[in-house]
View 1 (cartoon, rainbow, N blue to C red):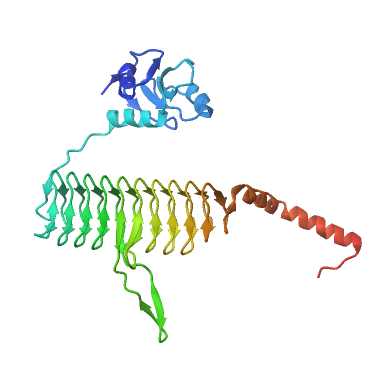
View 2 (cartoon, one colour):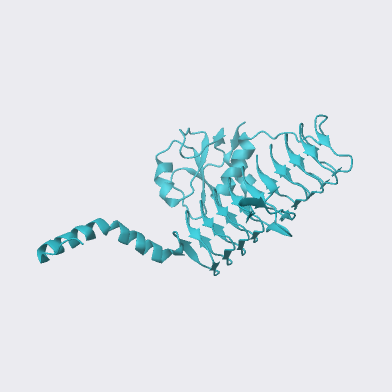
Length: 341
């Protein structure tokens, strides 16, 4: 379909500079081959020259960008605005079915809320309660006595073990496993003997969990994920962890047992935390860092072991100079007639 720039701007409450009647056939990112009937997006001032060199007819830009030969739609948040335009132009809405597919298996004691859907080959256990508007995709396994809130989305292959508590508007992506046993053993008579894990997992409202994530049940009590927290793909959260509200936990993070984080914590990719680590509110831990012990609030850390980021940057600069320092040292020893020890 074709829309005018004026119509697109109305979708995102944007201000038009240039030709509001310009016809737009497609929304495409700057990295693609653009045509005069395309609208694109500029996410950074450094990308403006790329826009000027393109054939795009229009662009979604920040409110500060002046008229510069292209028709512009100026908005507060170009990324979200362009995503809205792209979705309305190109993403065909799918009809959400409701009800239980005849190839799903739902225990007679389970309750599935109004306007919810359960797709084929999914299984819902004894005593489980699912709120209204939930979408249970194909091949999902939900154990016994789980509590699932309203408007929850479970992607194909998700597994919820017995007793999981899932808040409202939670999204869990494909093949994630919630509530498996923790990795706990005791050495008894020369054998690793399993410690029973009889707790459960609680996930707060508005949490999103990526694909291939594992969150283990507690030994006793609950492993908890606070409301609004977003967890990327391939993250491991062990038994008894207590994750705060609105955290960002990036891909391949691994948290050992009984770790806890405050609110608004960021753990970048491949961060590893030793057991019983605590991280204070608003702390950011950089990629591939190793953390342990008690970390205060409002820190920015990097490295293994993690240290304040400015200290770690100085260490990195020093490391880059080590070859020159070694050559200088060898020359000084040669001049002084000193032998290598």
